[in-house]
Length: 180
Ligand code: PRP
Image 1: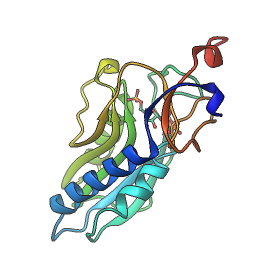
Image 2 (image 1 turned 90 degrees about the vertical axis):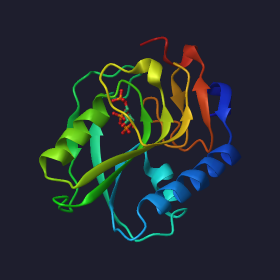
Image 3 (image 1 turned 180 degrees about the horizontal axis):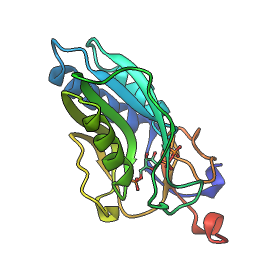
Image 4 (image 1 turned 120 degrees about the vertical axis):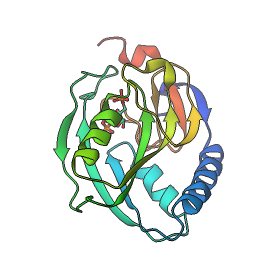
């Protein structure tokens, strides 16, 4: 897989440090509370696993699967709920864990969904924020890195469902996806 990567943006070590920093922020934010921490499949799996272990606070975990990229590099704009959470978020403090916020459409869909279900509070922690990609307003409370407007893969992020298991985050060589 390394041969398909144009450049490394964040190394394994940089990601680890960011998770520890964000985990401590979350720990402080939710002291004395028990938030429902919701990982957004599939991209956020590794980030979710690392960040919850960096926050020494009570929490309940759940997962939601939404999709809008359908394996490609451009959002279709239509967010589809694939698999829902199992916990009831009414009256609860919700923390959404995302790998990346790009157009913002996924995050807006999730925030609207949990607000409609009566969540007491909704906050967002994303490893990567790509403000240059934003089409709708959707802001995160905890951000690992602000990324340039390039298609990134690794540490959960995919192209054509591949590269999620790269231990670092990098920019894919354009020739890999230029035939699309
Ligand atoms: C990716 C990513 C975010 C979303 C961000 O998910 O994991 O959830 O896109 O993009 P947006 O801000 O433009 O909406 P994707 O739909 O590709 O599913 P995946 O996590 O299973 O790869």
